[in-house]
Length: 387
Image (tube, rainbow, N blue to C red; front, side, top):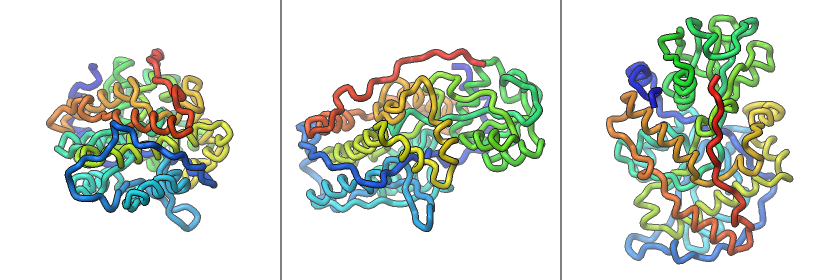
């Protein structure tokens, strides 16, 4: 794909940081009743190796009302208590290691490299860079259908598309995962970075620059909804107008040596995340999901607007499936970071996705009474005209 050419090269490499954006997703106010999971034949533990005493999951954590809360399904898992109880039955303690969003990617990569952590839910760029650098991790579950990015123009500017911004100034935080989406948008319209005056600003600084009229547009995350609500800008494009695999993606990643040594424990962890996804996917939990997702982030009405995508139903928003869209996205990321000099070795998508444990978890949870047979279906390609 031509957007992977080196025209983004050295500037991207110089600006790149390991940090990954993780959407803050909900935790329940009450735990969901546990489901007993039978041990599948495909997920029995390896005979060799020292006994496992502690399992460590790294998770993004942020302060909220005087206490630290974990992002996404990890907080739900703590609230449900099922994983902790199942591990305790096997003589294993559960440790959740908090990670600040400001240092998420580097800290998680260091933890994996030093084998201090066993699992982590984090983003595409830092995980693939770790993999290319020799840290053998695999993604074992998708935390959902991805996160949106937005193109916002300043108040009073008549532009209707990215093509109308040619020659104008755009703020974007260089080297962050949403730059890949920006690159795809430019390429789909026959444009390059050289067609614009690019300012390397984080989302907060980009919002301020747009509001002050210092830049003509900004390419950012859901903060764009606040910018528009405050009247400082107008959204003219988002990933809701693009193929689904253009959205930013995260994954539940695991050390490959850990999953090989402890397949039964790996299946339990994946099952816990599947149970959390199933709770999120229930229509009756929608309001609580939106309220929890708004903690310290956006107002509930803007969270609802960000989540609203007619191509993705509420249930499918939380699909854990490692489907074709998931694979396509990570293949695109692997090609992008290699073509632009962020890594020397091209990561192959078949070396980063391990779906054995998800299949076992879905089977075991269904056998234990949770109706998951066919509950989620793989996403099919949906072409959307670039504009």
